[in-house]
Image (cartoon, rainbow over all chains, first blue to last red; front, top):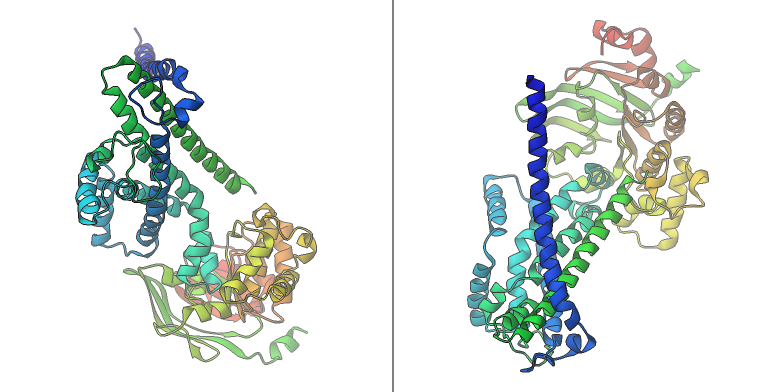
Length: 286
Length: 260
């Protein structure tokens, strides 16, 4: 066999391996989706979405969990997005590139990889007990904010870095102060990127179960939370609760709740993709 | 005609004394002294990396943005020292406008681009802002082309129009001096000659310092020319003299195209 022919074969084998890996992954994903949809889809109905938990699986609904998740996400976004963005602005625009700021950067990257249950333990001590917020929506949102802050900071810094140098120079050369330049030019131009990052971070938070269970979020809630200090449950907790029941009918309910969660996730992620595409169009024009 | 113009007494605008600039351990400019007259065009020429852009950026302190940059010496703007920590850089940059090599309109409407400067300096009166926008666009010879689409994006304009928009934006804060860093190097010949014509008109009211790679351009638009080489100011004088009868051998070699 000529050497280049051997190379060609190696090429084919490598391609085959890569393709197999891809097909396997997609196959798993589709199996999972199919399983959830076939079990859960028949459950989805107006009653399921607007009902309260019940001892009878056929009457049980997810309204408190859905409302709890929505409440939790809104509050998490309100807390985490501004803090994350301004932390990123500080690191990117103001901090000296010193030894200290490099350590800070490294630690933020590490925090993004800390297991979520550890944030749950921190939240339990800090918010539930020390700040005496109890097992409330506020404690949950603060804990989830801590969890996603590193991700938001990293994504925001990336977005700030993408803002062309020319905008900063033009603004400063007109006599704008650093803060005016950051506020009027840098942040607005980074915003689509920041929002994409934030939405992806929130979509991570919406599926988190461990830290909320750690906080002591209730698994059976028969009411919609009416304030930030109210107790709550969330979709993944509800699903977890139903899955751990012995009755098979509850497992179908769990599949239904997971399906609703998946739909929410897909919606959030498509919104992020939509923003990114719009953003690219804006820059390629002209 | 030419002699009449050179005879005309132009007041001193910028006076540079023993200016040196360092980037970390590298010295970019060596002991530059030079007087720039008011309401004339002064061209800075020289090969890439000779320090002409660095020199230009001293006048509005844009070198401050580079953490490793250090500036020594004196620059007097109408007699006032502009170097040093006590100088208010915001006020300085209001007096000294700048146009960059790559046109950089903000991704906002044409109107908002020009209105940005006056707004950040605290102007709120809508009528006054509209007046300034119109006036600045007229001065930059862009008004007739954009008056019907002031609220469309500045990024949608052609390259030459974008650069004139940037000039209008700089003029809107009413500077006395206009720094231009190779303003036409990315433009086609027609847009370039429009910018050059514009410079000829603007010099009636503004002191202009322009960095250019294009020697014909320097010869066409400027009254004074300074030739930089490897961080040194080799020769500075009337443009005609620098191009036709240079005192220094290096200047002659450069302007006749023997190097650079």
